[in-house]
Length: 194
Image (cartoon, rainbow, N blue to C red; front, side, top):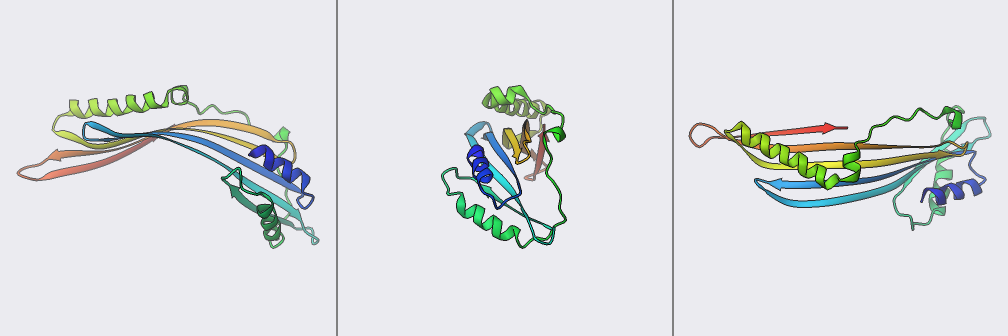
């Protein structure tokens, strides 16, 4: 999808500059109610965020953006609408970064989540189960574990072409504790880690 959009922008003489950010993601998810894993699923996403620049007669810069999620969707209506919107914007001129401005690579990736996300979800879910059982006096009502991988690639009209990969783990859980008499206490916690 990114390459098709880049070719269309290169061929469109209305834009003085452009930038595309393509995000691809995979979220592996595990849902547990009490002691039973109720559901497992994998959600994949992909989208392109496109920003275009249009030079204006008064030495200002017109700018607009749009998002594509369907690679089969016609691009021309998006380009026409972005051009029309950009001509209404009056920004001070500025330039996009080029290849010399590329940032240093930062590693924010857990290979275990990339290679074995379902196993990573089960390990985290199991750790929650064991911690609750060893604590005593509480019961796990529900837990959700998300192990997410995302790759982002940014290209622009000046030749910048950079990518980064990242992983995230997110958990939510609800604990039940019995109070005196018929009282019950419910506690909700969530944690996020890179």
